[in-house]
Length: 333
Ligand code: TXA
Ligand code: MG
Image (tube, rainbow, N blue to C red; front, side, top):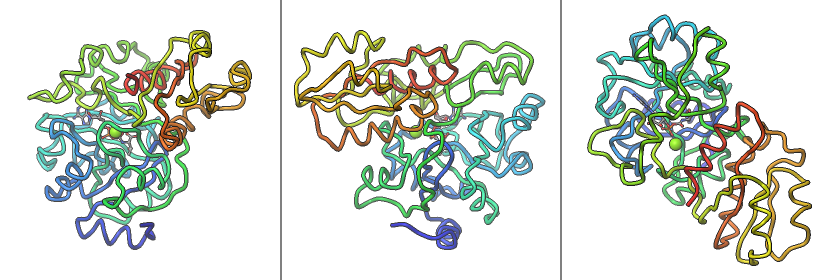
């Protein structure tokens, strides 16, 4: 059900959970400092208790109450907040263990979406908010995706239209300032972080790449528990090709029970008239538009109830390519 801003504030104050729009994806939000509310978030998502949540704040002032803010955090938040950057820092005792999955750290983000900001300004507590989808499935970028994902169990939704960026925030650990680590690639690239900090950062994902499908539910949380090998997956099996040429090479084998996703209209033209549908992520192959449309197109593809989705990795040399390809690899079979 779609609710107003006032209704949203009342629900959150009453300890309920509500889906909120952010500039990245919709979040399933609730009082971060209330154990019973945090529990409701884990329950509804079916999220393993080993996977910690991001705590959303309106700015550095509120973050100071929740974590030990170091020099690097001050520099990065000055440049990138509000925005799609989540920072991991040593937590303060007020952070419930449940949120951080027993880790000594907490993830913090100040979202840029005006509605999310208004909600945070209207409350005297921070908001825990994972993406508003069932665990491991495709994140929602509009209210309909939330209803599709949860059905009758869908939470109340504050409608902010379609999310501008469409990919989850970049997650960076600042726990050890000498060894900054990108735990999840996202809209803010390694290069942008390096430029602002004036120092080199290790290649993203070096820790998460070690994770296997078997280690999705480890007894102890890993360094970045939410970056397991299977994630973001649509219901339809997704087959990922290294480049558009390899995907095109598959053309003659595809049947009307399958579906192809392409990056631009030239690629679509190469497929010509076919028995199978071809969905285009961006007419002119604009990478920001591809990111913006990616999850919505995967949700749309699922609705067609085909047996397989075929698409290729992004081969453009662009900071967003890494984040998109990372999501696709985790979503793929
Ligand atoms: O863009 C976003 O970040 C969205 C919007 C709603 O803000 N939220 C989101 O939350 O994507 P979620 O729960 O789907 O992803 C949070 C990620 C997970 O990979 C989780 O493991 C990681 O952040 N994380 C949270 N706390 C952590 C911690 N203390 N240490 C390491 N990783 C942590
Ligand atoms: Mg998620």
